[in-house]
Length: 193
Image (tube, rainbow, N blue to C red):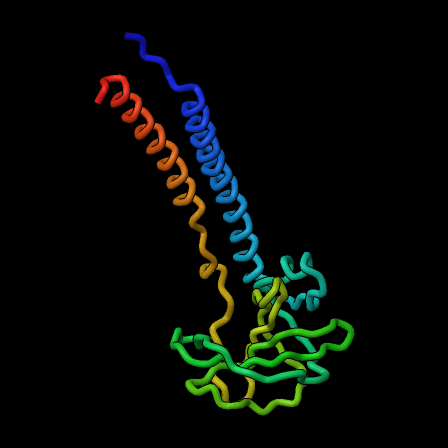
């Protein structure tokens, strides 16, 4: 009795396994990219000089985790969102959307409190740390905080997940599992069970 491999099924399985291995290799490449990015961010934390407020996505990337000063010429909106204070306690981060002279608009975190009550603020100059914001924009986390608010947690690159290695291992295990299952299916077919 000849044991012939089913050509179409074998090609499909090998293509799937090749794709999974490729995805695992891609995750390893992303791991190295992420490690370099996190090292860049950790370095940025040590720079005490202010960076100019970013206007483009490329400038945002270079400004993250640096100190900055902005002049909020007009408060467009005030709000509050879930956040943590410098001690790690959960509560409300008080926010504002500002018009900035010559730089468009920016989100700022004014400080933290236990309650989401409205914060009164008419704008002005704020110092702080540039953190990631919504839609790829930057936002300024005020340091020192505004008025009676408590200090908000400052952005920290340690909060950025770096699980590309575990994703790579998963893809490699999926590939190995697919090969084992296919080998068992072939064995069962060849033994006539």
